[in-house]
Structures are given as C-alpha cells and as structure tokens.
Amino acid sequence: MKAHKKLDKQTFHAHLFDGMSVMVGGFMTCGTPERLIDWMLESGVKNLTVICNDAGYPEAGVGKLIAAGRVSTLIASHIGLNPIAGSMMGAETLAVTLVPQGTLAEQIRAKGAGLGGILTPTGLHTPAEAGKSRLEVDGKPYILERPIGADIALIKAREADQYGNLNYAKTARNFNPVMATAANLVFVEATCRSQAMDPETVITPHVLVDYILTEVSDGR
Amino acid sequence: MDAKTIIAKRIARELHDGDLVNLGIGLPTWVANHIDPAITVHLQSENGLIGLGPSPDPKDADPDLTNAGGQPVTLQAGGMYFDSVTSFGIIRGGHVDVTVLGALEVDAEGSLASWIVPGKRVPGMGGAMDLVVGARKVIVATTHTNQGKPKIKTRCALPLTAYRQVNLIVTELAVLEVREDGLHLLELHPDTTLDTVRALTEAPLHVGTYTMMEG
Image 1: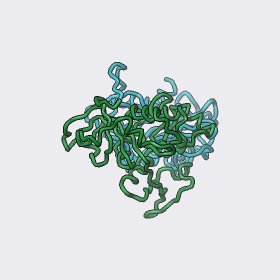
Image 2 (image 1 turned 60 degrees about the vertical axis):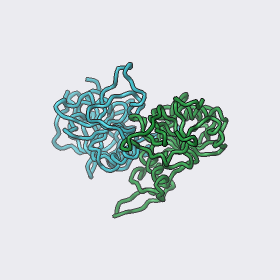
Image 3 (image 1 turned 135 degrees about the vertical axis):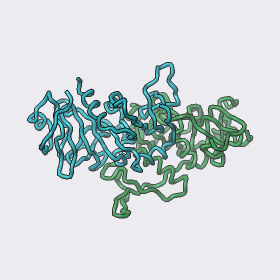
Image 4 (image 1 turned 135 degrees about the horizontal axis):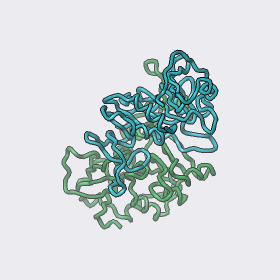
C-alpha cells in the first residue's frame, strides 16, 4: 500500500475539527466503519453535522456520536431504531432533517457527480416538500433537491488493494460507494487488503480514496 | 385465521410470476410466507438486494447481509447486491411491480400516511416515500381499524407519505380498490357484514358486485 494512503489515528485526528460535516456509510450499522467512529469519539470533536441513512442504534454506528452529544445536526431518512436520537430531537438538542432515502442517495450522488441538484417526484404533497421549489418537466411536477456534500466521508469497504481500489461486502455496500464521491476527504476502513484487485470487480476507483485503515494494519 | 394471516394470504394472491416486489417491515413481510410455490417472485430489500430469501438460523447470520429493518437475511440463487443509488433507481424508475406497506391512515383518494405522528412518533420515512411513488402497484396492508377507530378515511389527517398513489387496500374485513371516484368494495370477509365494514370505514364505499374473501 502506498504510504500516503495508510491511515493512523494521529493522521485521522489531525483532519478533524469542530463544526465539520461527516458522511458515514452504512444502513442500520450494516456497512458502518465502527473503528473510525470510535476514533472520532476519542478525538473529542464536536458540533458535527452527520449525514447518514439512519441514526444507528444507541450503542452502534453514528448512534455512538449522537449519544455522546457530539452531533448537532443529523441528516437521515430514519431514526426509529435509536430512541436516544428521537428524544434528543424532541428536546431540541439534536436538529434532525428527515429526507426520503432515495432522495438522500441522489442528493449525495449529485454532489459527487457535479450536478446542481436532482428532480424527484418523491415527497410531493408531503412534509418532505416544505421549503423546496417545485418544477414541471413535460407537464409532470418534481421537487428540486439540492446536492449534499461533506468535509469528510467515513467508508466501510470489504477489500482495499494497494492502490486504494475498493469493493464491498453484500448489503454492507449501501451508501458507501456514493458517499466516497461526495466528500473533500475520504477515509476508508477496510476488512482486508490485497495486492491488486481484478479491475472488473472494483466498485470504488482508487482516485476517490484518500486514506485507508485495514484491520490487519497497525492503525490502533 | 387471525387478521394478519387473512391480510397476508390475500395480498400474496396479487403477486404474479416474475414480479419484482418490495415488502415493508412488519405485517407486509408476512406476505412472503403465502406466495404460491408454483410462481417465482423476486423480493427486493431497498438497502441493496434482489432475491431476498428466508431468515437464517441465528448461527448462520451474516452481519453483512441484512434486510431494510437491519435483520439478518439470506440471498436466493440468482440474487444480487447493489448500492443505494441503484436500489432507489430501480424503485423510482418504475421497475418494482408491487410494493406492500402498512398505514397509519389511507384515504379515498389513495393518499397514504405511514411515517409520522407529529409530537408523538417521528421515526422518519426511510424508503417508503420513494417506494409508494415509484412502484407500479401500491398495496396497503392494514387492519381495518386501530383500537376500534377507522384507519380508512375520506382524507388523511396525518402528514402524507405520498399523494394519490395507493391502488389497493387489504384489511381483515375487506378488499378495497382506489379508483378516480373513490373506494370500491371488491371483496368482503365472510365473518363480517357490509354494514359493519361501512360503519368502520370513514369514507364512502362504492358497492357493486363483490365477492367473498377466503375465510
């Protein structure tokens, strides 16, 4: 692995700052990089804006950051399995923006693909439309949804090769590949590393990846 | 038969060979247990797979293989994985034949409320808004009432999941089709009466010829 792409805790902490925005891959913590989240907790960084499919569980995924009071804003499609997030939302100690799951994926894709937004019929006539523009194309109404990016993305991969190419495990893929396109810096936690992946099996090209922590490395 | 089984069995009959189907969490999941073994239905889980199989033995559970509720699942032969962008492209792009989901309220215009009770319960919409807008056929699986109160209304009072997208409502008492002019009774359960269903439905019912649901 190229030296500049291998991640240690000190390097990771040097990139964190209060008030930053963080995209975290995973779906109900399946495909969430738990070690990188633990390192974030240890750093003490706070006032975070977290973009994630859901709020995880109170003791897993981004739920750990929420429970520790490090998150001020959460953008997610679902928080129902994390009662702490629900009560913090009620107490207004956590601002939660709920976004339809497919819209969230497309907003992140738009950022990563250099688009000015996307038009979706999802959410018309619902609270998801509040404060947004409605546009008609060929006589059909759509909501204009803006791009979502972040300062950093935390990605969980199955395999990373020495160049930084990535693939993913089963349904642990979910939001990880698209989030790897939409952040200024992309940190990857990979289960295993290899010399070189079959180019046909690469899901995320190495040019999108900045730092990799593998479970076999001495990153701890 | 209990209400859940009546509803799940009836909805399973709406599925056709080769259909791509998304079953919501809870009662809709039960539909999978009643699909005719003579047909092949491809089940999608919106977190990123098609070819959803039965739950594994706990000892065989793979933490990297879950459904949209986060529960361990299996993949059937021919199944595959994809990312969330592809998953919702399939959903929004009209490639899902049938989606089945629950309701807090559903109305005579085919609008659905299923994701929020303001001030009480705010779990979020997850993928439901995309599924209801994108699927070719939207079936609501719900008990006819909640603690005796009608869930089928002239207009939903709760914030919507989607406006005018529901095609069929299946309860333990009746099967109702949503048409331009409102709700039409297609089937009635033999253990109830038309008057009872009318009394427990807070919307006008069009009643022409109808058949009896399987007891």
